[in-house]
Image 1: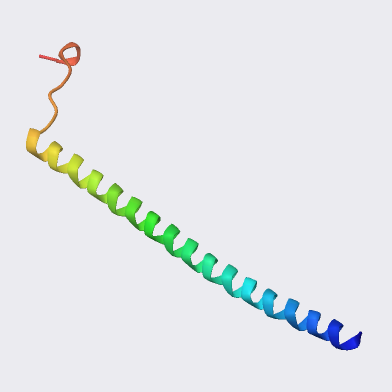
Image 2: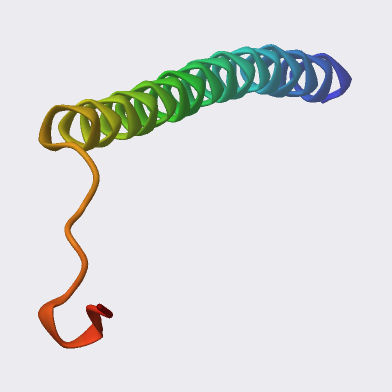
Length: 71
């Protein structure tokens, strides 16, 4: 009886260690993916700002609206 109980405990301990390693690996992969997505969004945001700046510089200063023009 005691040997089977010890065997069961060892088996549970081994499987929980495997589950723990799996969870840690999954957490690392998920955090890496989140970092990659965040970096991608940051790069996309910087690219969008640069495109808007380039368009603004290419078109020159925006003309004043017709109703607001003063002589």
